[in-house]
Length: 299
Image 1 (tube, rainbow, N blue to C red):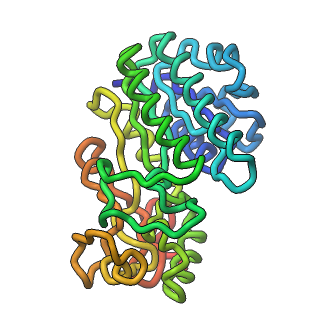
Image 2 (cartoon, one colour):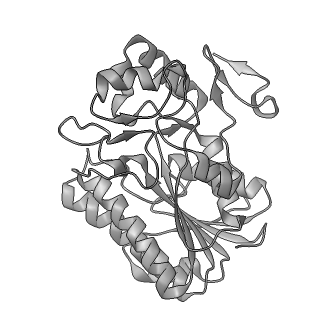
């Protein structure tokens, strides 16, 4: 477990989640070292930037030197825009390189980005049903695409690095992570047509909640290689996942009660191990954000 306000390396720091995580940790008093192939010129002045590619082992080794913890967010984010082998090999190679370098350097804690795509539903070329709802960290994986396979390999890599070097690694299965405006827009689309996000089981997470979960993971009293669903505990638009499962996932063993709006993924492990529950929530009509950040409800 890392001490609060130590030095943390964030990879993929110029990406969608990485920018918010980098800013959040810097604002909370961490000494942040950022690594990406491009620089985020809007990052706080205190952030120590390094431009480089984790495909170069020397870059990974230099980046982790002297850090207390690692947040690994660098990845090709979908299988759409690159060849299959580039997606798989690129994602797995970067995770291996930085975790191995961190382990060799004696870094004690890492948080890495996995994905709910690992269950095999999101990017499959064919429609696939969830085996059960809600999906838990131990649910069957029905992988049929290179991105999901890369996340399975990342999680296996995390377990190996823990056994090899003793580094504790928390792998977060994130859904689509975005800001309040995007979540509100996606919620409106789901309410108009629930098919819009049926492959994701209507999951979401706000960027600020993702950043907060990352920080909690850096200091949580957790050891080993641990996989966590990190999602909001309700569904986009407040839809009834159990009712919609009958239409879109009729073969799934659905254990959610009809008439609620609970998420299609279990969240109890993140609540128990991290003390994490998403604060940015859909209230049935609007996106609700903590008053300290937004001043209340926003449309």
